[in-house]
Amino acid sequence: MFAAIKLLTVWIGLGIPAAMIAIPWAAIRNDFSLMYRWGMGIVWLGVRAAGVRVRIEGTENLPGQPCIFVSNHVSNMDAPVLLPSLPGRSSVFIKKKLMGIPVLGLAMRMAKYIPVSRGNSREEAQKSVEYAAEVLRGGLNIVLFPEGTRSPDGNLLPFKKGGFFLAAETGAPMVPVVIQGTAGMMHKGSFKIYPAQAVVRFLPVIWPGQFEGREELMEAVRGEMEKALAKDQGGE
Image 1 (tube, one colour):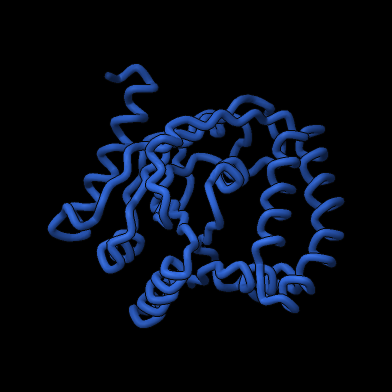
Image 2 (cartoon, one colour; image 1 turned 45 degrees about the horizontal axis):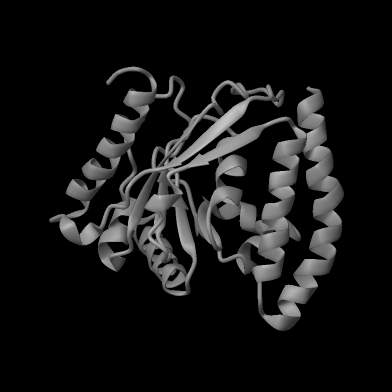
């Protein structure tokens, strides 16, 4: 439990003062870049304080332009490990109700996070995709965890299709990502963190224009991720 306390101490102890400075600064200048850098720096420091080491592989596969990162999901530690590892600024899909949290909700809106509702209507889903496309055109990456929830055994769960519709519509390159080592760091329903090494691996970029539709695109992305996970598990 000591590792989790250290992580939260860093996040709260640095995050609150940083937000008090960076949010007004971002609002006055209409520029969120400083707040984003501080935020990702604080997330990274908290992860390190908890004893979690991160190894990044496959940076040569990054396309050098705004893209859609598609990652597996096995732990609550996935996002804190992945987001600071990405180049530039990134946006994520989040639960719409989180936007109502004082201060945090404002920061999320300024960061151009994309709100979604559970069981949302087709119209609301389309609005989320349209906003995500606008965010991409604005130069930000999009981060997807298409399984929608954590895998209990490390095997990929069925993918949700929204992000692949976004890729097919915008033509933005998709970079499959596999995260390993985080599953044992934090067990479901527990706040305890077990320090270890996490590996973030960027796989070769996949271009939506090479596929007939989103189903074929989704299978290609999933296939690359499954192949990488199987290789690391000794399956190939």
